[in-house]
Length: 539
Ligand SMILES: *[C@@H]1O[C@H](CO)[C@@H](O)[C@H](O)[C@H]1NC(C)=O
Ligand SMILES: *[C@@H]1O[C@H](CO)[C@@H](O)[C@H](O)[C@H]1NC(C)=O
Ligand SMILES: *[C@@H]1O[C@H](CO)[C@@H](O)[C@H](O)[C@H]1NC(C)=O
Ligand SMILES: *[C@@H]1O[C@H](CO)[C@@H](O)[C@H](O)[C@H]1NC(C)=O
Ligand SMILES: *[C@@H]1O[C@H](CO)[C@@H](O)[C@H](O)[C@H]1NC(C)=O
Ligand SMILES: *[C@@H]1O[C@H](CO)[C@@H](O)[C@H](O)[C@H]1NC(C)=O
Ligand SMILES: *[C@@H]1O[C@H](CO)[C@@H](O)[C@H](O)[C@H]1NC(C)=O
Ligand SMILES: *[C@@H]1O[C@H](CO)[C@@H](O)[C@H](O)[C@H]1NC(C)=O
Ligand SMILES: *[C@@H]1O[C@H](CO)[C@@H](O)[C@H](O)[C@H]1NC(C)=O
Image 1 (tube, rainbow, N blue to C red):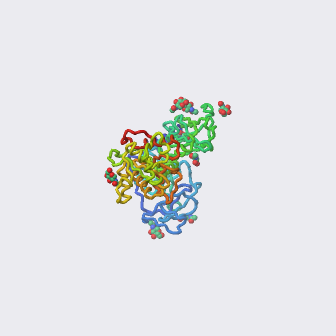
Image 2 (tube, protein in one colour):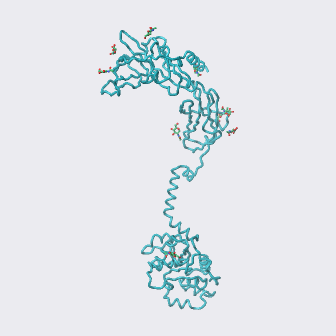
Image 3 (cartoon, rainbow, N blue to C red):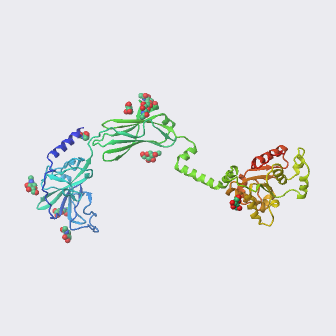
């Protein structure tokens, strides 16, 4: 409050006696070059460049390398110094040798948007006629709407950009030598002298809960916006409330970080917990921000971050990235399998398309000679109730065809029976698969040993991958199974992968009759349903 009064005393008279608005005669400063400058030790100085030297060239070995036009702090009283780009020399004088020295004269605060006054230091003890003002290398009288009265610079309107160092030059003569005595004034433009509003806590939000990890360090940060003020009253503090009790607070040791803008200041006050313990979770934490206008506070609690590797993995971008990559790899590696599983389980595509055959059965004959089997097959009552013994002897390849064809009424295709000889084998297979709704492969060691048979299987898998209307079923016989077949030569990769995922049934010659019965029931379920005639008895 007191500064307010002081500053006002300062500003109002300047407005009253201001020269702004009056038409002022500006003395044009002569081109007469001055060769001797004086500056005060500890003050900022800039040596004007000679007008003749357009671009100051740095001359090698010129003192400590100062060039004209560069601002620096004058030091080493008593030395005469020369500058690159100027014929003038500088003599630095000690503060103590000044006639009068008031430290507060070296800086001034000006309120923005109104008239401002900058006195030249030493106003009281030097002749103030003919004072000339510069800002860096520019004459203020040329650059700005301004005037000089009794050596004091009047800026008719102060702008934010006026912040910086101003120089006032006095001409003095000592023992017949003409000097320019240059003094510096730091000008700071401010929006107002006092804060108008209480602080605003930007973070954390009131009653928030922050997640922490036990055993890890954690920073409690409080971000507060303050109004600018000349005398600093702003304060941000963190308190710990024992057991969440707001009446039992302890001040915490914190670190402060400030970001200063023209009319506001952002303060971040951080309390660092070196290692979070369960004790920390019991307390509440209050951030209290205050200035001369008022105060604000927020209280927060800590809670343990949900654990679990999965969650924490997903929580971090890297974890997410890993997850996506590994999913991608799995998908890539298992893509064929996934496709086969999907396509073989879910019928889609145009099933209504008219096909010549319902089932294409592919097998390699493993039983006794065909004739012997034929006799066996023709023998009466192959599936009668008493046929257990017979059916066990009849090879599955033959029996399967007969059940499908004769009992269930499917149109079965066997390569050697239904395809006219003379065509190229591969061509026949591909065409036959295309003409069938379903492919059944009866697998055995001999089957895998036959390249022709494996070709049928492979073509079936390819067709399945391309055309989902095809159904496929594998029947494992004689102890073969996907897990331990290792035929020579090895099967194509595609077939190996397909064997593991395609729908399959297990046939065992010496299985008990219940197992055989369930085999036939499963088979019937796996068959295309619509084409079957009302089934005669199964087994
Ligand atoms: C700032 O503080 C000083 C010294 O305590 C006081 O004289 C002055 O009036 C204050 N200024 C403002 C703007 O409050
Ligand atoms: C600096 O220059 C002034 C003026 O030319 C001269 O009087 C003075 O002796 C010089 N000082 C030094 C230390 O050379
Ligand atoms: C600076 O000094 C050099 C040589 O001493 C001279 O040639 C030049 O004209 C001078 N420049 C000025 C602006 O006095
Ligand atoms: C100040 O200097 C001017 C010339 O620069 C002179 O006319 C005037 O008399 C001086 N004033 C005093 C008080 O010495
Ligand atoms: C925070 O909680 C306190 C009491 O638990 C309640 O009085 C206050 O209104 C809450 N503040 C907000 C912003 O929810
Ligand atoms: C906490 O803040 C300090 C600086 O105040 C920083 O060095 C440290 O890395 C921060 N720790 C965490 C966990 O963010
Ligand atoms: C505040 O809490 C501390 C720690 O629990 C306890 O020792 C102290 O007595 C409490 N003070 C008050 C005033 O409740
Ligand atoms: C925090 O603010 C509330 C009002 O928002 C006030 O009642 C309470 O006293 C303040 N706490 C402190 C410690 O200043
Ligand atoms: C399979 O048959 C369809 C007609 O049913 C035909 O359009 C297609 O070209 C055939 N594909 C092959 C490979 O023969």
